[in-house]
Image 1: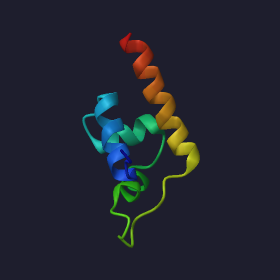
Image 2: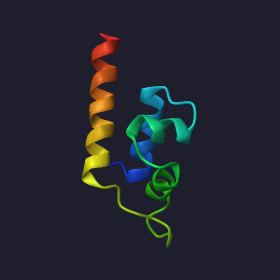
Image 3: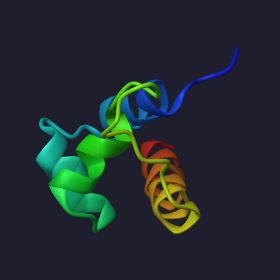
Length: 70
C-alpha cells in the first residue's frame, strides 16, 4: 500500500502521539507553515514536496518511538 505525503504525516503524527500539527512541526524542527504545505493535496498550488532531511528527521523520531515502546 502506497502512502501519499499527507497520509504519511498523519500516520507519523499518530504514532508519535502529537496532539496537534504544531506539536509535530516542533518535534521535527520545521515551521508549522512548512508542515502545512507538506500536508496539502498534491494538486494544490500550496503543496510542497517534503524535503529529504525533514523525512529523515521524522523517520528518526519514529524509530526512537518504536525503541521506547519495546
